[in-house]
Image (cartoon, rainbow, N blue to C red; front, top):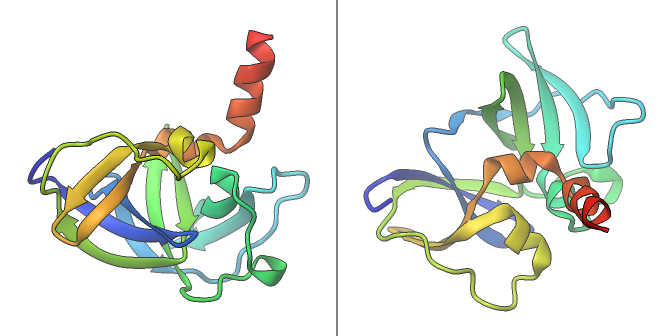
Length: 155
């Protein structure tokens, strides 16, 4: 992991990182069209160069309640575009800081972050911009219902 490029994001006041290889681009979010009966963490769809993107509200996908009224993001109107399983997604985040280099290996998540963060983070990583939670893209895209389904299947 040392030397890998990371995109540093802000989600719910936390510094987070995604592998730069997972981030295809950063876009200004335009109109987001809601999808009827979609889970709350799917904000809707938007378009990028005639390609439909599913818009993920990262706060809700983690299982945190959005502080913003009416689903509007107060600080940034940019989203990180990622692809997983042949589908493209726009991740709504509080802010996109920079691209930086990993300065170490992934370590344990310190206490105090909560079960929501433990589910979506692979661990804490030191970067040239400071420590960040390394986000597991698949776990984030699965949303908070993934944990509920796992608990029900185990019961």
